[in-house]
View 1 (cartoon, rainbow, N blue to C red):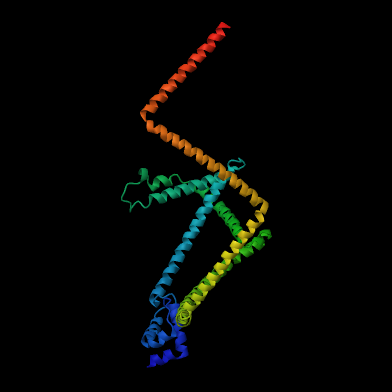
View 2 (cartoon, helix red, strand yellow):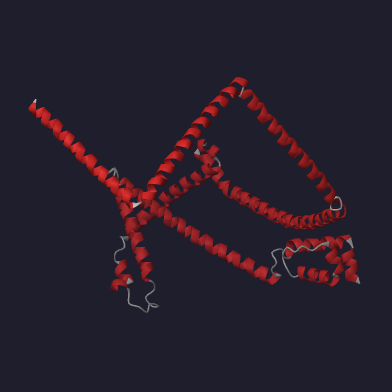
Amino acid sequence: MASRDFCSSGEGMEILQQVCSKQLPPCNLSEEDLLQNPHFSKLLLSLSQHMDESGLSLTLAKEQAQAWKEVRLHKTTWLRSEILQRVIQELLVDYYVKTQDRNLTSEDKKFHETLEQRLLVTELTQLLGPSQEREVPPLLGLEKVDLLELMPPSEDFMWMRARLLLEVEEQLKKKCFTLLCYHNPSSDSDSETLKAAKVWNLAEVLVGEKQQCQDAKSQQKEQMVLLEKKSATYSQVLLRCLALLQRLLQEHRLKTQSELDRINAQYLEVKCSAMILKLRMEELKILSDTYTDEKVEVHRLIRDRLEGAIHLQEQDMEKSRQVLNTYEVLGEEFDRLVKEYTQLKQATENKRWALQEFNKACC
């Protein structure tokens, strides 16, 4: 009963909604669901006392925070060594670029050669690893003692180390100024003192901007949760509206649909007949404008003459057909006579040609 009274109050409902939206996974629980399930609401409140905003238990959240603290510490240590390593490599690359100009002093050459030798021997020593824990034979049979013999003299190393601090500091200062100008382009024209002061506060500015981004992301997440809830509510409202529209269609529109369809069909039929009559009328108008009485009379005379010529041709065709039919009755005898006639005609033509040639020769 107490849990039901708590859920029925406005303050309890607000607390439950905060729990559902922040600590527990997003679930579309309405006020009606919480009121109808008071024991479930009590369970949600009990769980919220043992969970943080990310959904983890308080013990796991504490362990996670400690683990993240250690990770950040190791990450900071690694980043320092990585930055120093890259700065030294950039110094060596710049040295090789400058060697092409051949404007380096003996001290510059000595400094970079000592630095490169020290760095190379250190990296090779790290590759070999501790000799006590190594089970496989060393690479190329080398030991750390062999590599340590290649170290530069201690005097050169101390001199190189003192100068290296200045070189690294100068490189880091240039990088910081570059980062500052990228973050705030208006600082490019400032003096080095002012740039140094701005760089000193740049970390706090970046942390503040990062916090603003995280706050904006958290607000976006809350807004997304609210948007999902509103989308679910809107979907339910739209479904109810569609159900109402369907009922209206079934009760009101469908009763008169058949009558409306009949009237529309009659209207379209009349309209179609009118369009056909209009098209016929336009056709007759075009014909009357195109063909005058004189043109029609000329066309009639031409047609009569053509019909007379066609009639004569048909008569000639009929006569020719009758003659052919007569010849076809003779059969093979007719073919033999045609061949003999052809041969006689050919012989006559040949003799006529020979006589003409003979007369030409006599003359």
